[in-house]
Image (cartoon, rainbow, N blue to C red; front, side):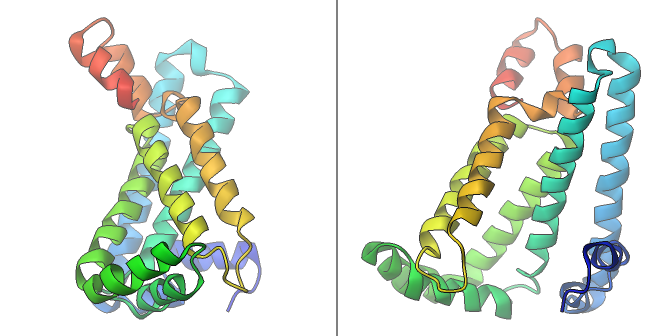
Length: 213
């Protein structure tokens, strides 16, 4: 049960949420991974700040903070897809999509494909959300990953559109945020993408990397 955002954030940081406790032996492994990503994001931001005067401004700092927070959201979200192969929460909400998706074909897809194959789908969804978290927290391949995350959000929008306890605009807003992260190449603001582009500038690798970064 939520208390207030500051105390709940503290519980998340120390791994004392219900989602963390459900992980058993992996509880503090996920805590350590999050702290490692947080520390790496800060180090990457500071490195960019020192090396590139063009990024020493409030805009880059704001984009980094927003990107880090959205990445943290995905990290928190991936926790309740555990423990594998199928978590109770994931099974429940997939079932809700089978009842409340916007279109009949989507509801049928959930019931005939998703639900019978949860042992395959749950790990894939967990890895996808963890990848979103890593990409956004580090600023790595943000343009490509943000587009994928936007499509993923739209799938949630359609999948839970008729659910009485969900506000469909939540998922539309989530998709919009990721479209903006992609369009404005948020990884170039104090992220790994900025480091890669500077070091590979003018090379074939830089042209390839520009598609994702």
